[in-house]
Length: 115
Ligand SMILES: [Zn+2]
Image 1 (cartoon, helix red, strand yellow):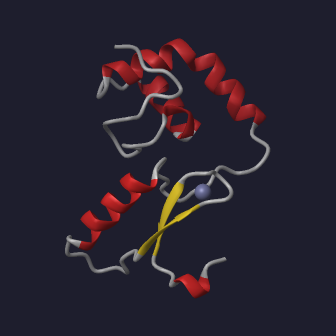
Image 2: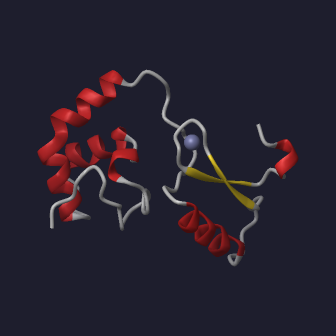
């Protein structure tokens, strides 16, 4: 199995993101550490490291720093899972489509506060 830019990560902290939407710093870290936690991902990173580094140099605006999901169904599934967990901090209440990165984020803001 070879991963491409349009493969969906199934492991790690960027699970459910398209590889092209995963922060490049994350991929570079995997490359630098030769982190074998996901052999397919390491293979992809080793193969594309020049391209990845090139893209980092090219970034014009900051990548959305919030956790992003590439489709609404997955975002809602994650929202549902979070709301079934016990945690102390504020829970997200809804999913919205981001006009910066085109992915879906979770937010704890009511709809009226949406920026
Ligand atoms: Zn975004």
